[in-house]
Amino acid sequence: MGDDTLIAGNGQSVQTDPSKSGFVGDTVELRCVFINGKPPVKISQVTWQKLINGTKQNVATANPDLGVSVLPPFKDRVSFKHPAVRQRSPSLEDTTIAFSNLRLSDEAAYICEYTTFPAGNRENMVNLTVFARPVTKMTLTSPTIVARTPKRKMPVATCMSANGKPPSVIKWDTTLKGEATFQETRNPNGTVTVRSNYIVLPSRETHRQKLTCIVTYRAEQFTDSVILNVQYEPEVKIEGFDGNWYLNRQDVKLTCNADANPAVTVYQWKLLNGSLPNNIEIKNNTLFFKGPVTYEFGGTYVCDATNSIGTRSGLVEVNVTEFPNSLPFDGREIPLEEHNSGAVIGGAVGGVALLVAAIALLVFFLRRRQRTFKGDYSTKKHVFGNGYSKAGGMTAHPPMPKNLQYPDDSDDEKKPAQISGPGGFEGGDRDFDGNSEDLKRPYFTVDEGESRDYDERTLAFQYDPEPEIADDMVSQTDGSVISKKEWYV
Image (cartoon, rainbow, N blue to C red):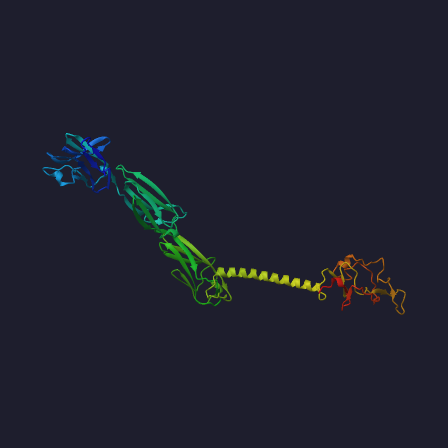
């Protein structure tokens, strides 16, 4: 219900809508109805006025005697809605007007004023808002986007919402990594143009990528998309060498594959540090090697691919082996990289296995040296001749033989003479000490022992009677004795 202006005491009022709105080019109605009271008053004239900066401008007038009048510049676009207003005997209670072909300049406050007798003038006001639906479009910044070297960012697409009122909101929808810039321009007629550029780093990866612009205007949404066309130099890859080119293999070839936009126009093959083998046939982007593989096929092959943007190269190192390499279980050919990595891994595994075996063998021999019977000694053993003794104790083997020497002046029957006492050596020459260094050594020879004088004559050995075995000692089959305290089952 519109605002009412009441005529004091009589109940007359003028009803209008508080506000109305429409888009440029549309038609909108501005309602104005006079509610008469009791006793009724006489309507002398109805006038519609446009209020601009506090100044009233007449739009249309309806008079019972003079008829209807619409003033320029509204003459062709404003009319009274009800035919009764235009009759010879008009009815002026409802003087709603229709605005057609709205213009932005029509936006203003409009007053509907009734002149009555004897009550005087009564009026009410409606605010008219005019919207401008924007023109939205999306374009490529340039028909041709080129990925240059060195690489640099550049705008690739522009989304624009022009002459909108109120202004639009622009967003981008894409999987491309980039950034958007925004700019608003206010036009003299009150509309706003919003412009947004999407900036990316042109490359092979951005080619054929989809870029979508989403424009939101009030409750409406518009979308538009473009597919990027990025031109770039060839990306070259040589295929065909599987790491398994061996002597006498047949039907081998190398193919130069290039991803480029626009397409590659020229392929050129060469061999580093040499000339291409004579039995090679070049067809388009492929090298066909005629006949069986020979060592002559080995080397570094280079392919140059050229398009209108530039030239790029690819290379492959071809190694020829005497015998074929094994194929993997799935039957596929083994690439060179796979061969190299397999050799490295195999060598590492073999080295570890060899190290483990060596350690195991060393432990085995060390334990055999320690083992002399069912159990093991937990302490170090020292070997003297054919017997064993505990470290730190006197040997349980029969005592060392006494070294007998023939006297120098005896040429007759050689009767042995004792060099020393019962111990077999002179007392001052060596005493068997339990803590002696020799007893702590695992073994020694005459050369390793302390220097002693031995005559070159034949030595005779005799043994002292076997000593008594203590109660806690056990005799062994090899002549040695051990303590029961150190017998381990």
